[in-house]
Length: 511
Image (cartoon, rainbow, N blue to C red; front, top):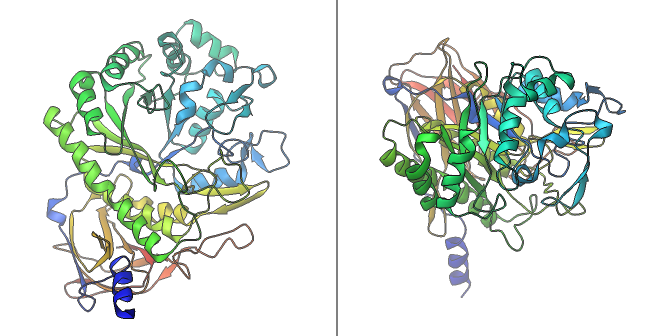
């Protein structure tokens, strides 16, 4: 009886094959042809919880050190991350946001209730100027999500004019009155968000027509070129993508996709920090399922757009757990462990493979919300394991993807197989190579043999991210529980590189 129970437990838990066989990775430099757009490493900032207020923005009069109202510690952390693009103001908030409420003197800006996230008062002190100025200071592209759900065509058209026109137009002159003489450069414009849900509960045919109408009036002013993005599908809704591509592909530059590693939208989503081995394995299996989802959406797009003119933008992705105990239930504040870091590492490795079609992704969200880069509490700030993954991976931005094959052991969760090792490689314009590796096995190191296939290297610099456990995380009192350190487990061999990849670790190798 005991043996039977043990066997059943193992079936639902962990099994590994080929433990004594090294992981074999072959990098095919001769097949390299696609650049990894820097926008693959994009961020997302919504008026949700303390992402904006207390996270990014504290105001010029705050006792918290700030640069023109932006938190100094958060600003410097984002600057160091080299954030390439940031999406704003939502999310669901975008389709209730009326941009004219967020311009002009702050004391005169009308307040509103944030009906989507906690029913709290939004004072609009962070608006168009504050966001676009932040992007300018960070050197990142702004991605504006326009209000289609509750806004008008005229409202969105005037917002584009306000931001980008340099002429003697009413909106350009209004911007000048509000202190900004020259227009901003705004490339990315989302025409609605989750229009199938919080953005209007629309059907795909109806939204297709609405998209065509709204996008028509989003004009290009004074040399500013807009990359117009249709509100795309959630997860497995392939019909939404098919319908939009059939009806409106000729009017768009991109279409979005949302995918969360989440147990479901009702009931408990599970704790961010207290989870079983099975829950960890479920998370790994769910997160890499994004590859099949992306491939199926790409297949639909390829059939209707064989020249790949329309980009796929996964502009919301990441883990979604229960809010931290004691925090506001509508603020989606969650801790961030090594488990989340593995989701980030594996997902980014996947995105790097499909950049012929995938042109941008935006993890949700940048500060204090869901799988955040940064957590704050009053004057305190801490960087999460996910932040460190993005920093370790930033060398992939604008580098050329090097296709690779991985042969490795597998973890098994129920009927799902999870490769023990996830990998990606790229080569930058200076000839430097970045290889990122994740060993998701919580118990066993992996011997990895990397064949460089025509490439040569004389020197390796390595960085490793690992905690004491898969549930390790950083707190305000202990901010260095999970931080990158120097990795010395790689060496050059006659055939390539040999690596001893510790259990539950993420490694970046710079050649």
